[in-house]
Image 1 (spheres, rainbow, N blue to C red):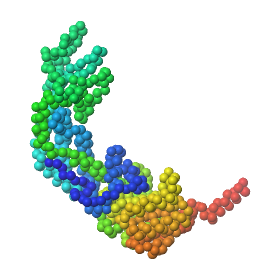
Image 2 (image 1 turned 30 degrees about the horizontal axis):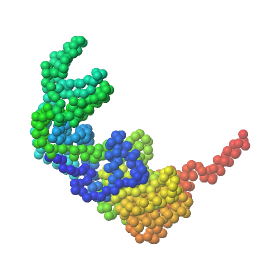
Image 3 (image 1 turned 180 degrees about the vertical axis):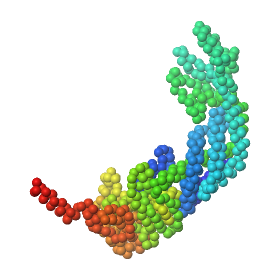
Image 4 (image 1 turned 45 degrees about the vertical axis):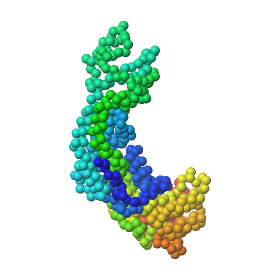
Length: 573
């Protein structure tokens, strides 16, 4: 019985539609940084990244993932057992690369098939026992449990295990091969053929001893090639000629030195050449093995192999969450609301990148914020001082959506949200990308591309967009961009130094019909100290500069006192 094809990432028969983050969003949201934080393995890194950047706003899929991840996080024993299972699945994946059984399969291929079945039995048994001993709640893991129980009960696993052991024993009756080697005029090995297959290893008292006795008589040569005196000869036949048997190894001595074994398949150049004659000689044994295997032709472990990336995905992110919790930082399971609401309410939100740095020993003062999208405010114009946390909070919002929609616990104490169908970012362009169009042209082109595919369910994050041109040009385009976002109905954070844009929100809201109102948000400064707190308020303008000037002593009054003091001391000297 096969494992029913299903996924731990979406319900069975799901019709969810997925979008993939574009390269700009992958870069701006630091996806590679996140993936590197959860694994150092290249294969895992790539598979985790590919899963993370696929986005769907299907509420059922998001809920399904959130529940599965919660089980992974709540049961360390589940992660431990599945980590051991991954090693077995890796073996199955390696065996899968080799040819399946055919009517003329070699003994080595049959042995690999037995090894595959044995590994499959171990996988099913292991995961069945693990899931039965845990109080799992998620639909995904409960379905997996149901599947493996059905396989275990319906496939006669105890009998299968016995058959595997018995068949492997039969396959392993071959203990040695006697070869005949032809030499050329220079006494170099020219060709090799099989003389016999034996059910015993050569020993000191057998053929090896006779050979040594012969070799010690340096003046003697064995006349002819009749070896019937000490073993039977298996001649080359037409059915094996096309595989080179009788000419299995040709060329100079270094050809023989280059033979390399494969520990997985038992195959090497000589073995490949011999495999057909092995099957021919052991035809009866091979057929016997195949008749046993035919009872389990529908048993396949490859469905488990397909689950490997998903299992790795959940395990690695659960391990990261464990590390973050040890830093006493909050994490929570997101609750999903109707996507048509286009809402979001996150309490104590912070950027997960800061948490990752904290787990690596960096001393970081992490400030949390309350962030809301609702019918009164879906587009924020975020202003504040340089290095005041604007980029950090903008990125934090995008990462919270991305993590939540993948089922991962989010860096907050509470999150209720409507999933987005995609996340678009517009951060400052790399200088190398602006050579042909110029900075303003390149930024305008990217904005146009976003609006070509964004929908009312999308999340758009803009970071200092259009800030590299003169104020008048940048403000002109920025107003049209904000109007377009309101008209489309997206959710957005637009962090900018263009305070005039934030002051003209009434004009924008009144000029365009739409249900995504634009609101002003600021990052705060408390007594000249950046608080990194955000709040809904009008842009502060020069008041920020005044606070910073006072803190660092660059007001006119302070600088005048310093100048007068130095001048007075100089005259005294």
